[in-house]
Length: 330
Image (tube, rainbow, N blue to C red; front, side):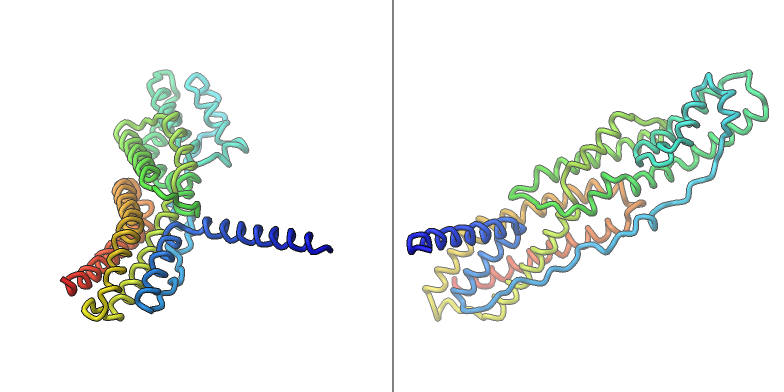
């Protein structure tokens, strides 16, 4: 290999290495990139060593089957359904007993339950029904109406688009608030669907299916909780390091000026802005989650609220630490 080729290959290797490093860096969560910059500047000025905190899982492993409620076993024979063909019940029973019906998605299963309730109401309005069959249909209808919240509960647990909220590890962007406000709006709309279901035993099928699609493509609650967790850990690390350093502006005016520069141009301008977006995102999501999932996902909801509270406490402690430093120098 000639000297010229060696130089070219060396530059290529350096370029590939730099590109790989840059790619890895920009794939890191924004909280990690912001706090690495913030902490490294403090380390240089104060001669301290703030290291990245260990990452801990935001949520325990979720066993969705444990969240399900038992549904009543109700049956309508195929023979009975054939006699009720004019009500449309025959088609509903065939659908449920087909291979597709047995493996239908949670949203379609919920729609099927509501369609059956509607079909039963229509059939019972027919005065030509056999008395025994009519009594059987009345029992099924009353039972299904009584457990409509069980069907809704199991929909919330089984629906893949809702599981996605608690399991997707998609990255959060620089400005997450619009995405989480959109998620909060969708969750509120889902609560309204539940309200309509309870009061009128009806459901807007297109609206429900459209919402399932939006939730599947939308922001992740788990990703938000992971960022809240990570930033809380970073804030606590930096706060403890600043507290232990016992900085005195009387001893070093130059250090104090640099610290103020880090505070205004790094923490306030970059870190704090991002933290504010996370806080507002968490407020929006948790407020919309509470009425919707306080029964079906109580443990997850409690964990989300606890993570948000820890985040707010870490923020307050950090601001208080900076205030102590600034007050000591005025």
